[in-house]
Length: 123
Image (cartoon, rainbow, N blue to C red):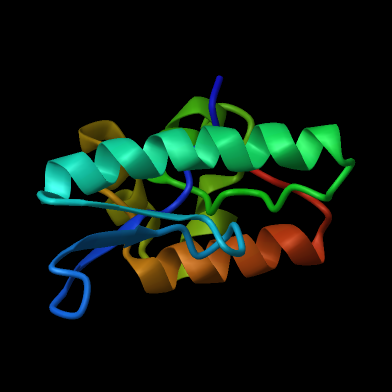
């Protein structure tokens, strides 16, 4: 399974193209004439970045947690505690997991921080 890293895409007047960056992987970026092309190139850049990091024994940052990773692990997690960590009511978290409603960046950041504090990861 390939980890899911955040890909930010913005238009660059200077480059006259869309620029895709991957915040968790330093220096990992790509561009393209359309958002779709930049996204496709970014996905290839992620794979290249990971392959290179493995080849040179560079530490690979974990991707941020997603609603999909929470859904996969939900049977093993204390959803009440997770909900409190990210600032949601448990029933709201349950509904979001069921409907695959994405975490907000702030929620993902809170969860990632709590996981790191406990030497855990969801990928």
